[in-house]
Image (tube, rainbow, N blue to C red; front, top):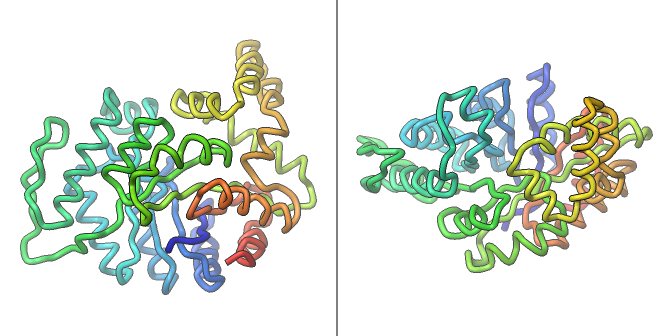
Length: 318
């Protein structure tokens, strides 16, 4: 069964990041995921993670489907899986309009349909089957002289009801970011309940082990500015009971006052989403997500806090 994991993405120092991956491996974490942002390529990075670890599962959390064709995605994932000894988890997401259009020159028009067709193509390729007909992702590729792991896990990033239901139908798990425990309990779990007992729910748990709680909250608020401006996240946050926070955020942005906008994101919101403070606060946050139904709560460090110590605190729950 899945268990407690970690989101470990590199900053400026790749060597330090690889040391952290090794630490998570030694501490007994079930999985390590890395994000795909405007920096290093996540799938290439996972090869280095595989070399720096021995047993922990390794995954993308998540890689945009428009960054690679289904063929290239399947080939890369299969290669990583083989090198790591069967530890690969392929986390896929549609991403956002600004990323897809500005980075990849593609368009998100029917995200659920696009994800469904993409997952079907990748799944077929990994199984050695002819990919299904697809208007958006047509391919006739099949491996020659090579056999991938047919049951390599595919997870789908989801926030909305429709994408959650697709994940339950087509994937082995769902990946969540900024989904509060209440949203997981009331929206995510009911939406995927027909997927079966092996279906995984991965939920990012932002943590900041620190003596300076206010500074960590300020940093977390800064990180939330981007997400509070993206339609997919806004809809989910509103449904999570944070409509007043978003209204206050919008008022600040309308005035051209980013500090006022950030101040609109309340301490209540931050406390529901993250564990900021001492080791007990970190562990309490992980437990909240577990109690809500997240099978794989995955801690991620808030910049400026002691993430290594945060990993050690969370590891006491393993």
